[in-house]
Length: 323
Image (tube, rainbow, N blue to C red; front, side, top):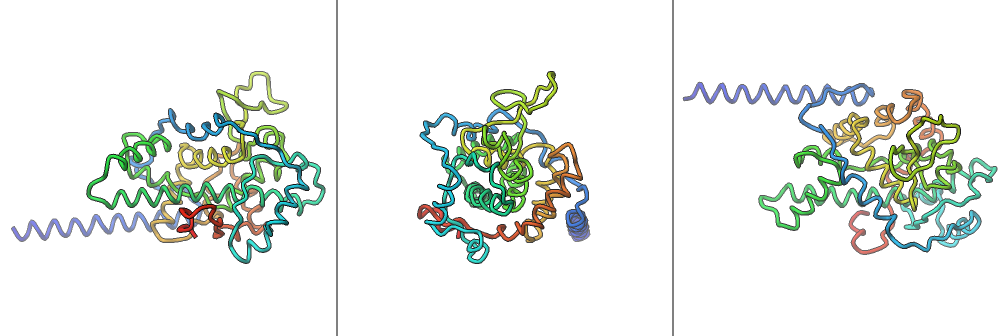
């Protein structure tokens, strides 16, 4: 029996080394922004039925939202001592949640003033959604570490399978999809897609990330051909747009390599770097690699990576554990 055991041990070691070598190979590719070798058994398929259900629930809520003008918003930020200089130093952000951009965004002549206002408005929204994902991710790993799960936990898992469009209740896929988007990357994409908050889609439809829709409510791009079937998704509030954007990157097949690259960085206990992950967003726009170059340029020129490790000050006790 001994030779059989030895052979089994030898095969196990070989398999382990093969996995390790493949992981190292994939990490090297991630760091170089190259396509990845990925398992066909992970991250396959998408159930779109309930994908944006929680996003559009915002539209069903009654709202008395008033669009504040730019000067009122600036005064609010001043009264609460919310400025980006302090954020960069303290790494803390005030939990100020605005639902609409001010119409004056397109009339602000100073590029610096416009950028600062835009970042201050969307930064808490991005952090809030990342916090929500972080709480869910912690809960997922706690559930996975248990030998037996309660009925409540099983129902929660089923809900998350639906939200992330996971087929066959595959936990490996859910772990890869349920993860945060680097703050600097989200800001850069919002800046690019809206012209720092000045686009018609952003002001009329709260669309920060230019997501397309072929059905339902949306805004038709100006100058589009008569036979154009796509529209830009519109939302009731900015928060909906941020959540839809994160769900899009975390589920759509076009961003599979983005998610696998992020998982590779996680597995190797490395920072989830926006400048690395941007390489895998060439399918986000028709301009492809040129779009990636522009995103990186926006991130670098505006020092957006300084916001990647900032924390949102808690609005309730439950969120204090995230700081």
